[in-house]
Image (cartoon, helix red, strand yellow):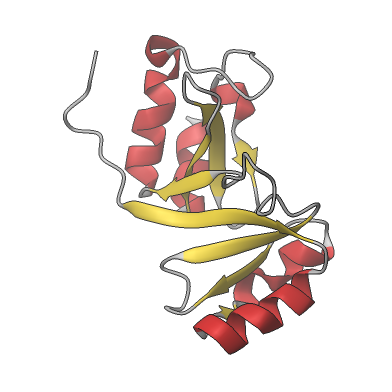
Length: 149
């Protein structure tokens, strides 16, 4: 059952695992012109991603500390995140039970699984083949108010 009114806006970020976030950010700056986004840099200090971009954050790479997967025979991206506005995020949340999406551990995803990143909200799920996806919004205040209703 598809909903023709639901559409993602764009890919928000792609997650990559690197041994050292700042060393990797330097390489991406040198090679691709990607800059660290100061407004999200605090996430990296708490074990989260170091966000880098060439367009002030419209499309980003999220550098997480971890074992790089790029040289493995089955290499692939960790997760693709799609950006939506606040109302569309809440619309997606409202469709979760009908969509019957599961997370990476096989548990059905529900509104209880919304991740509050303090500047953004995300919901994580997998496709039927195990590929990881995220729907994220930076309309934090809108979603905060909507969740209170």
